[in-house]
Image (tube, rainbow, N blue to C red):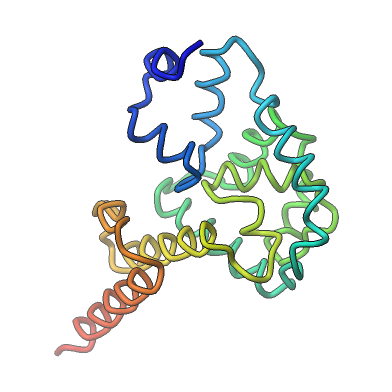
Length: 201
């Protein structure tokens, strides 16, 4: 099947599809399911090769994220998710999404994960959680952020700043051409402006 035919069958836009093929942004679980359906395959066919390569290379790629770093990153993606899905149970949503791609995550594993401990999770569970939150597994695994993860983290900072000021529905993705440092500066400016408004009599 040619790529144009695949894109037509999935209903995804060409720009959206190619941006993710070029690793400029991650596919999410829904994307993988749609593509798998178009190909007549299981979503696991996309995860398994990546997990194998990740398992082979993770020990040589640097230091793993310490608990405080993982805790902060987990709390940030959860905060953005909660702001986008008011009233929904994030643990139940993650468990349901991960169940189709990996072993079910127990409540105890989830609590340990959000507290900065991923030791009880398998690599496929971490990958599935990352995919659900639209980040890469290395965002949760690695102490140092790579270029892709750094950009994702900066985008998350923008979304958090907008959520903090009640403006999350603004299109943060319109700032996608800015580099991570610029995005973080914008996020800081948004928060500073909000604090200034609150301090006014």
